[in-house]
Length: 366
Ligand SMILES: Cc1ncc(COP(=O)(O)O)c(C=O)c1O
Image (cartoon, rainbow, N blue to C red; front, side):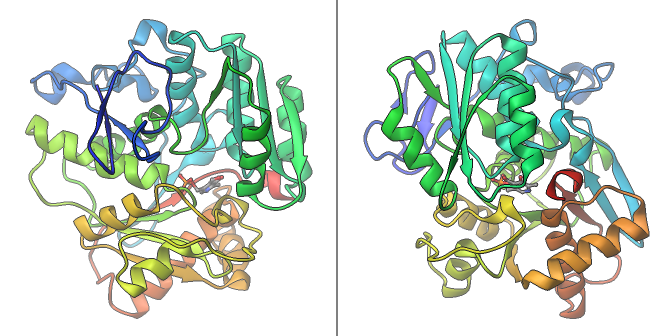
């Protein structure tokens, strides 16, 4: 069953995927979680996110998969690990969400898949659409680095470059959407969160059933943050963890920080960020529809929100790459810079196990 995250109205899961009929806000997948221990429910022989097929809304047999997920956590210093999402197909964590979203859309008879993107989601959608044999159209801001555009063409997608931000790209596609098109935009269908939630399950396994103390996540639309928060709530319902949670840290760029601003003001929703500017393109999301859910996830885990200045983002990405040998993207650099700030403020205390998300490859930004 699907339930509106905002007004709790129920929706039929077999219907085409979309937002709430009543209030236009994001829908959540509510699963019947079959009881059973992790040994029975996790297929450990599958080195992809489909090891959690029992906790996902698409049967393994109908998965559109390129082997996404089950990425390593790499230690980079005392009590700090990088969850390295650059290892995914198409080089980012967007592969997780698109595997589930494309699988669900194909099950419901999608004729064409469309989405606006900051770059990485477009590449992932193009690849999963190609694998499923369903045409894809994406729209991206005109200043998106060339490698993201080339990647989409490489997978045979139709690409539109639009002046402005991802919000303008979304409006461009909405005006041209055909009746058989399925929109898989961030938080405008419920299955990308289902793919991203597997990051939360993986941390459970990778920390031997004992989650880390702090999780630092570069946030644009917030799918991964909301996904992990949902994952841990599901694990508690299954009885695999207790009520303790990692403290979730939303990291945004100072040039586009609607969630940080709302958090600092104690608001329960975000206001559009005017004139957003950052070269961490995945964080250039001026009006996230799921912003209120990110704020709930922060509040529900005693977390916080941090904005990082533009020049610190790029220094931190370069410094972490040179220190670790990992392929760090600007968004991962922002998260790394936030860790230094939170340690200096003693918000992260010595000995607290901290996981920092490197959400994609840095190579496409050159
Ligand atoms: C590399 C990278 N990091 C972070 C984000 C933000 O992700 P989310 O929308 O899940 O907050 C994006 C989104 O485009 C991205 O491409």
